[in-house]
Image 1 (cartoon, rainbow, N blue to C red):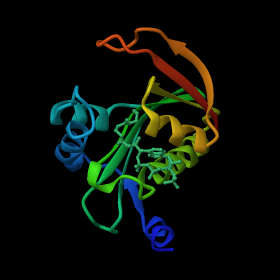
Image 2: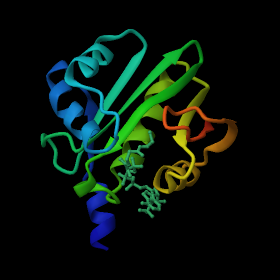
Image 3: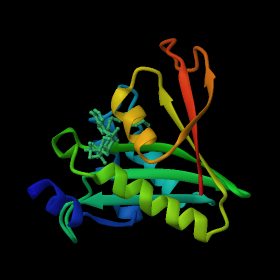
Length: 154
Ligand SMILES: CC(C)(COP(=O)(O)OP(=O)(O)OC[C@H]1O[C@@H](n2cnc3c(N)ncnc32)[C@H](O)[C@@H]1OP(=O)(O)O)[C@@H](O)C(=O)NCCC(=O)NCCS
């Protein structure tokens, strides 16, 4: 019961340029190849980019974020991550749900999501949202792992 109450209290908002540092720190705690603050700032100002942050507290600091880029009626998630201490509380699901709504309002029809083969958390998350496998990119990552591509109708 407590879990579902927690999930109800998630706040999602657009990322601001002033969020760049915290986004970089969340990214560094989620991925081996981290994007630094300057890279984050560049994404936040780029055309066609939708950047959202989520927190379990309204007005609280970001605990997870998503960056998507849209072109024409297709969009892709460039990155999505949640602080290890705040996982399994519904933040990623809330971020994708909000992104889907925003991209749909902007005329998007299809959202692509890419994930490293074997990333069971992301695979389960994408499948739970109704995303379907759309292809593979063998050896896509620098360390040789394959990428699995999923698509979600908007
Ligand atoms: C993948 C990631 C973003 C999920 O974030 P999260 O906020 O913990 O996910 P949610 O709490 O919204 O989970 C939603 C659903 O996804 C699935 N899921 C999430 N994490 C899972 C895990 N570790 N194992 C199995 N299923 C999982 C479940 O179906 C879950 O629903 P439930 O909790 O009601 O069972 C997070 O684990 C993360 O930041 N990982 C490192 C970065 C990464 O891999 N990003 C994605 C690829 S770009």
